[in-house]
Image 1: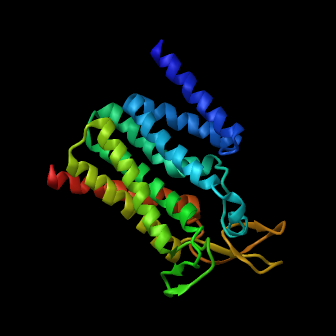
Image 2: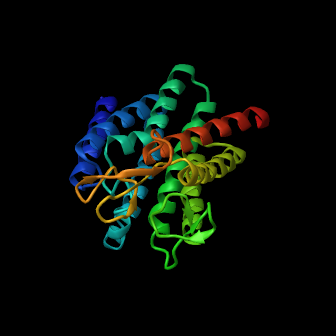
Image 3: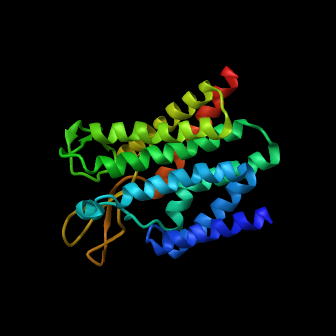
Length: 261
């Protein structure tokens, strides 16, 4: 009976995400599948942690959204997440949940939390950092560049990244009664995931140029026309960068865990 109630809540949450325009239809379906996997591996506590990420990220994505309209012209995706975005941020978490269910090894719990901390750190950095009064600094040239450029950092965005990772680590500490060192590891690794995201965004993520208006963008289509790729690797779009940054940060944390525990 309890399991059916949880399943219903997961489905209704995905539907609510669609109705609130935080998720597309495909994004809602993907979110439901991720939720089911997380419940299988970590139960209600895992769902609570996952919900903390999706809720806080969605709130910041929609906060002052009118001021972010020009920035969205550069970004591949807007505030409404599709299935690729959901899996980019939650796919690895779902995988770790299933592995934890099979192995019952607490190491996967730390990896799971780091993935969500990394995703939360990156999302908060992007959404809050874009509200900075000054343009960010591009790490390849250390010069100021337009907001919304992958690989750019700002003081506000960096502080937001720390806060986003800290939130997930503290909730993990509270929910799963983790040792303090685990909480610290999740916090630092989650923030490091954001750093990896920034580095890959600057050096490896593909960027396109609109043939009509000339804007540099992450979109393959702009002004209703195909764009031209001007740099980056073909498979390294924003979703791949998001997935890899959290995945690598989680494996790093799990590796460190073997030495300290």
